[in-house]
Each structure stands twice: as C-alpha cells, then as structure tokens.
Length: 112
Picture 1 (cartoon, rainbow, N blue to C red):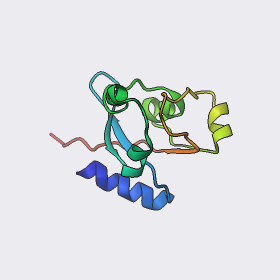
Picture 2: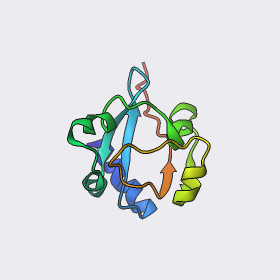
Picture 3: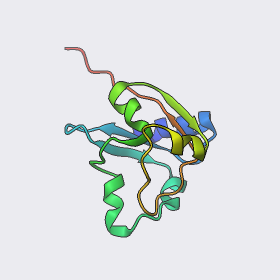
Picture 4: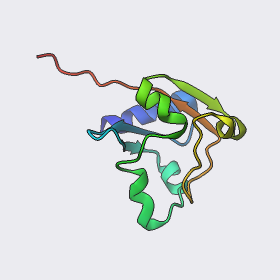
C-alpha cells in the first residue's frame, strides 16, 4: 500500500518510531491511511473509541494548518506543543505527543 511506503520513508527521514499518514475524506474529515505499529501499540484509547482515531476524525490541533492550509509544520517538545495556539488535548489513552512534523501531501489527479 502506498500509505505504508510513504510512512516508512517519513519515519526513516525523521528518525521517528511513531507516525501516521492520513487523508481528508469527502466530508473534510481525517481518515488514517497508515499508522506505525509502535504508534498503535502505544495507544491505550479504550476499545470502543479506537474508530475515532481511524475514520472521520475532525481536523483540529497542531495539524489544522497542514490539512486545511497546506502549510508544513515542525513543533519540538511537549511544552512547545502544549503552548501552540492550535493545541488541543489528546484523547484519553493517547500516547503523549513530544514532537510533531506535518507535511501536506498532494495526490496528482490524472489528466483528462
């Protein structure tokens, strides 16, 4: 799957063990396309709520400018993330976010 390949490259380039790639769906909500195994294993969101981080997640928090405005963003350190103007509290059971790298990817549309 292309999402898993992109995720592997992003993790290698950034040196991160945790990552995810997603896309905006028709409703303008975030659908997770690929998530790293360590990231998923570290997630302790209660069983019935895991679908909330996989499909139809509202765009909010530090990633809002990436998804809505197409702007790349790097935020390092828990304090910097907490102080970021777009910061929102992570869901119960979500592993702490200690740094963030977001890069908008655009899928080429086939020419007519």
